[in-house]
Image (cartoon, rainbow, N blue to C red):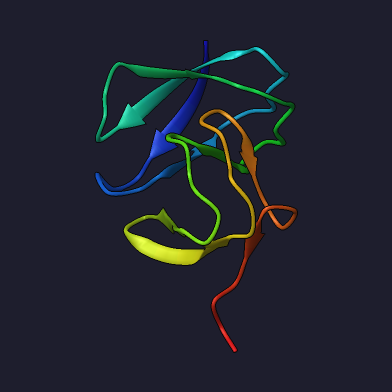
Amino acid sequence: MKPCVQLQANDNVANVLEAVIKNDCLSVSGHQSEDSVEALENIRCFHKVALIDIASGTDVVRDGYVIGRATRAIKRGAWVHVHNLESKRA
């Protein structure tokens, strides 16, 4: 299992702590201890993985803060980055 960390209980993403290959099993530590998620694609070290299905237009939350909005549906286990996330700043 590869490690990832959920910083706050309401986070819908976690940061992976090492590079992840598609189908790797991720061990989520933090507020949902002993949870796991399967990576749907390769994810770079320290990038984000979706912990739940995130609908298009939904806020993406990390460390208790909204970091952006999903530009399309993001499946649990998918890489969350600029290709499916946009800033809410003007």
